[in-house]
Length: 107
Image (cartoon, rainbow, N blue to C red; front, side, top):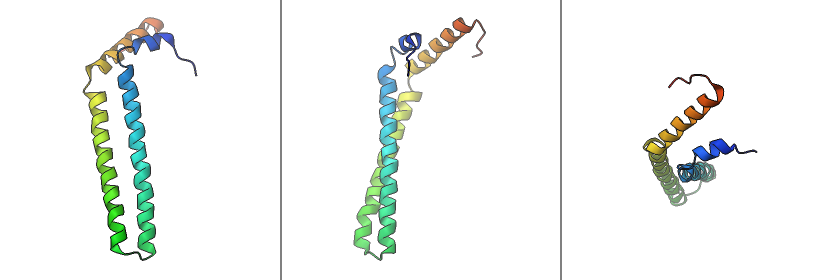
């Protein structure tokens, strides 16, 4: 994979934000995987006739992962949508693209 130098210079002010958003996205995917595993274990417990005392911790862990996902989702949205620097990045990118193609880029 090759990194475009001009594009890399445009991301100077938002690199940490982009990296943080990627890390949060990966953590969110981890909660999906954890929830899926716990649902499978809970289903196996139900079909094997396990007692309710074994199902309650599994359900509580599923709820905890769901709350963790919601918190990460809200934090990611705050980083991406509430930030003014990302908008500046998009404007710089549009200016760069319009100067290279000599076409008018509609906003």
